[in-house]
Length: 284
Image 1 (cartoon, rainbow, N blue to C red):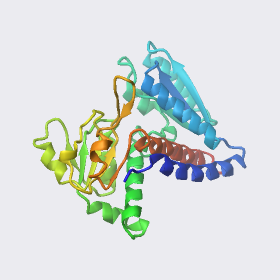
Image 2 (cartoon, one colour):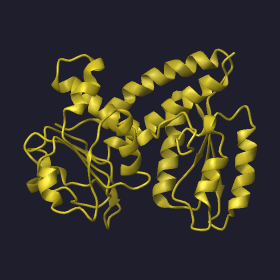
Image 3 (cartoon, rainbow, N blue to C red):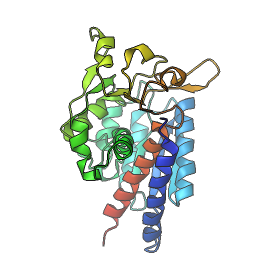
């Protein structure tokens, strides 16, 4: 069964709109500032999506665009100003960044209370991506069991989970977040021996590789749950996930499509973080 990421996100947006209405009654508008360096097509598309959704739910999004020749020092000055601006509630430095930029330095400079992407070690926010994965699994739990939502963690701990990839913006944050849930997935990377055999045992496969056909039909068991975090574009600029849906749709019990799977929920969880940040910063 295909999991409708857009539908799940829409439910979240309904809740977020109500929270924004309450803030606006106090003359507070959640404000996200995005620092966008260069014209990477994927980054531009992602930021445009954020802008669109922000406007739809009543938040404010300011995108500050920089040429690829920008220096770390120039970005530092801007981050300092944003840290001290009481009308800015969230700061997002869009990745990837050019090689000359010291990303870690910028992460540590950002006010943790405004770091809604969760990269600062003292940020109170979890990266939106692992939150999106959890939201999808909560949906599966709701659809497949008669258990209460409070039983979700217990259900998840009984699943055999395999995670493909451990990159800093994909698999890595998911691994760290699962640790907080007391769940330890089996991680497959380029050095893993017999990865196909490991995948075949999985109840849940989360693929964060970004390469077409990473997960093949013959490598998954019947009724497995598939989540594609990784995305890639073909020669026609069409988006694909880490598996071919036409090959796995009759094998998997549930799967996320690309596009329309993890992505929309990922963006929704970012707004969830922004609203929480705004509420924290404006408490009387």
